[in-house]
Structures are given as structure tokens and as C-alpha cells.
Amino acid sequence: MTDSTMVDGFLVTDEKDASRYTLTRDGVLVSALDYRDDGKTIALTRAFTIPTFRGHGYAACVVKGAVADIESRGDRKVDPVCWYVAEWFEQNPEHAGLLRRR
Image 1 (cartoon, one colour):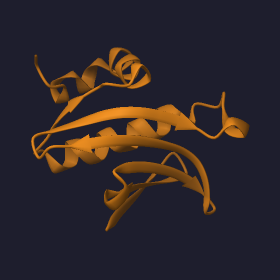
Image 2: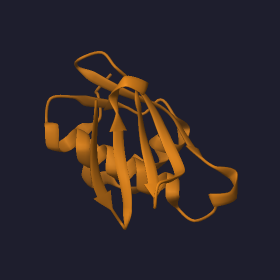
Image 3: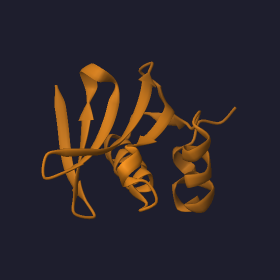
Image 4: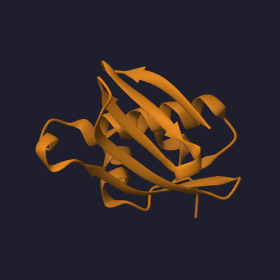
């Protein structure tokens, strides 16, 4: 099962069966964000951008889309396991309420 939304002109898709969010444009995979969901917390474990697309902020775009999706559901907290995701949350403190407290 998948759910998709548009973010900054890209399609962000939650590929639940693969436990990842993908960022595509015109059907081409640009970036992905892997996760683990235990029913209470979504651990965002790895952001990856296809090498030919790096340096354009696409990882930030897929994280932004994933965070928007998780916030809209309202039933999970986020554990930013990936260093890139942790930095994204530092740069976007308005989303800090979504973070799992340790």
C-alpha cells in the first residue's frame, strides 16, 4: 500500500510495504528515506539521494514530505536516527514537537 502527496513539485510516496518514503519527478526516483515503524514511533533511519541528483536539496524535500505526512496522521512520534534527519529537525525547530522524548 502506498500514499502520495506533492511537495515542491515532487511526488512524495510512503511505500509502506518497503518502509520508505520516496521522492520522484516524472516517475524517476530522486531520493528515499527509510524508516522503521513500531506503531508508536517512526525511526527515520536513512536518507539517500541518487548520486546524479545530489546537491540540490532533494533529501530535505523527502524529509519535509515525510514529516508532513507523519504530522498529518498525528499518531506517531519521530526518532531521527539518521544524522541528516537530525540536522533537518535542528534547522526546522517548528517541528520539534514531533520528536520522541528520551
